[in-house]
Image 1 (cartoon, rainbow, N blue to C red):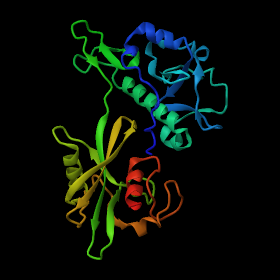
Image 2: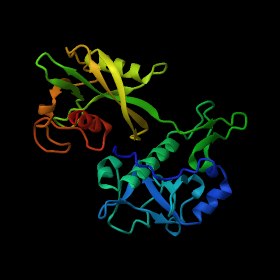
Image 3: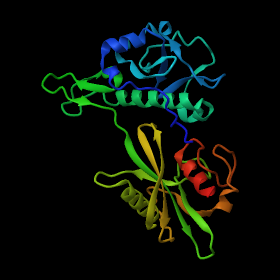
Image 4: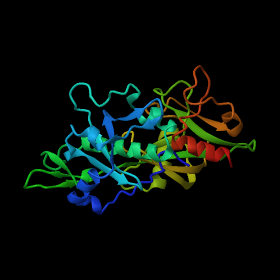
Length: 304
């Protein structure tokens, strides 16, 4: 299964609009995830998201608390403490550290990794939507952190969390030698040797399949047909939903756009078997990060 897709919480979409209901959840078996500058608080000794009890977070204003959901044990909330002055006294445990989820995600329990990226994504959305997009006035958090409303009485525009749809695709072709190969590329800023599937954001007014065809043509000058949806993955780094596809190439001559890719090549399954892993030191080709849908698509194809 794809990482970050094991969301087990009931998000209580109707109930969370009731402030009295939210207050009861806060005061009854609530657990609190802290976010600092887009990083989640982790117990690095146990590789777990650290959950505080209500008493531990009394010093924080709950006005901007973000309700995440409930399970059979707890009511989960997130707090962004990025603007807290000085050292947080509650972080007395030296095993506690604010960590980027992309660094720690694979080590976490699948369910809680999904909760962690939900907390990160919602806190990022609040941070980047502090002002009204219509009149520029201040927004305030409402509906337990799942909406923001303009404080200008003549405006009162409401904003809701959004994700940016992005397509990511493994493109294949069976060559004259009878060997099927897949198209992979790399950007200059990536770790040495890492190659990944191609990807790009969906433009207004186009379907997902059209976005796949356009992006591959723009990045590698390859024509694509027979686009097939495979799976999706939330990727709130900062705010994307990755929609994974496999497609067939009807042309094979690669011509890369240097603004997007440093290199692109066709690789056979046999060649991929010789690749190193993400994070390996030294030279040589390497597969992309194992928690990504890009890697999922590659493994899906390799297993066929």
